[in-house]
Length: 473
Image (cartoon, rainbow, N blue to C red; front, side, top):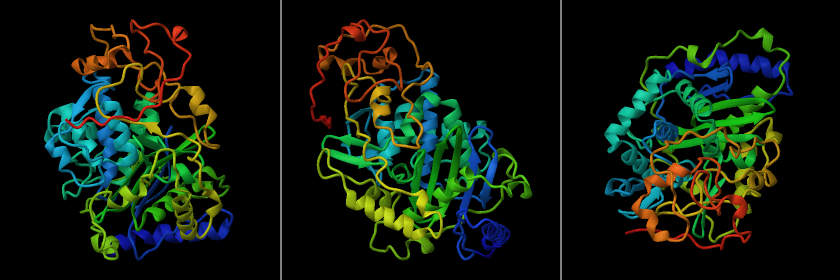
C-alpha cells in the first residue's frame, strides 16, 4: 500500500525531531512499512493533540458497538425503552459468531445486562439482541445507527450490522470514532459507568474487559476494543488526569498488546507537558479534520497470516483476552503478568506508564438473564462501594450521575419485592421507577418513586449471595 506509506513520511520525521529534542517524552512506535491510524483528542474542546492517518477509512470491527450503545441510550432518552426493558434472544442472535455469551433462543435479558455484556465481553449476540429489541430488526437498527452517525458529524461512517462482524460496507475512520466517543461522553454522562466496567460475573464465570488499559494504565475510563483480520486490532480508549480527559483511537495495530501500548503512548504525550508544542502548528479540532476519499485497507494478510490456526472471526482474539475465570472469585495473575510483559516488551520508551493489577481490587459486576430482579436497581454501584475500591489515578465511575432522564409513564407503582414471579408480566414497566446509574447489581435499595418502603426502613441484613440463574426457555 504505497499510498498509505507516503502518509507516514511527514509524521515520522516530526516524531523523530521531537524525540531528539525531548528524550524524556515517550515516542510513538511508527513504522513506515505498516499502516495504522492514530488520533488523540481532548474531550472538552475537541482539540486534536496528535494524529496520523486519522481520516483514512477503516473497518471498525467491534468498536461498532459504541454506536450500538449510543443508539440504545438514545432510545432510552427518547422514552422508547428503559434499562429494565426485557429483550429476547432470537435465532439470529444465537447464530452470531464469537465472541458471545452463548445464550439459547428464547433467553430474556434486560437492556442493562445486555449493555454490560456487550461492552465488557464484546458479545456479538447481545448486539443483535439490543438491535432487534430497539428497532425490530438489524436492518432498521442499522438505519438508526447511520442516522445517528450523520447527526453527530461522522461523515466517513456507514453501518450494516450492530456488532462489527466482517462486512465490506461497514466503514468508519479514527476521526469519526473520536467524534462518537465525545458524543457518548458529553450526551450521556449518567451512563459513563458502562464503558469502563473492569469485569462482569455470570454465575461462577468472570469475564474481564477486553480493554486491558483499564488494568494497566492509571486513569483509563473507557471505552471499546475491536478486531477482525481486515482491520487489525482497534481501540477507542479514554483516560483522565485531573480535569483533563483524552480520547485515543488506534486502528490497525498488529496485536492487542501493541494497540494498548500505542494508546498508552498517545495518552502520555497528551498528559505530559511539552515546552516545544508551541512550535508545532495547530491541528485544529476533530470535526475539522479533512476526510480522505479512499477504500479502507484490508490487513487480512498482514494481521492473520501468522494466525492460521486461530478462527479469524470478530473478537476471536478478544474472547480469549476477556479472561474467563475458572471459578467465582478467582483471579489470574499469570495472565496479567503475561499481558504486562507483552505491553512493556512492545514499548521502547515510556514503559513506566504501564502497570498491572489496577482492576484487581474492583469486584466484578453481577449480570444475569431474565427480567430485572426485585430490589436490584440497574446501573452503577453506590458511591461508597466504588470509592473504597477505586484505583489510583482513575476518575470515579458514574456513581453520582446527574438527574437521570428515563421515560416516566403512567404506572409509577412498583410492586414490593415479595413475588419474583410477577416480574416477567411487566418487564418494561420495571424501569419506570428506577434511576439509571444509581443502583447496585449486588442488592440495591428500592428505587425512588416506588411504593416500597424508603431506604432508611430497609432491613440492615445484607442480601443472600445466590448464583444467578440462566433463563434458557
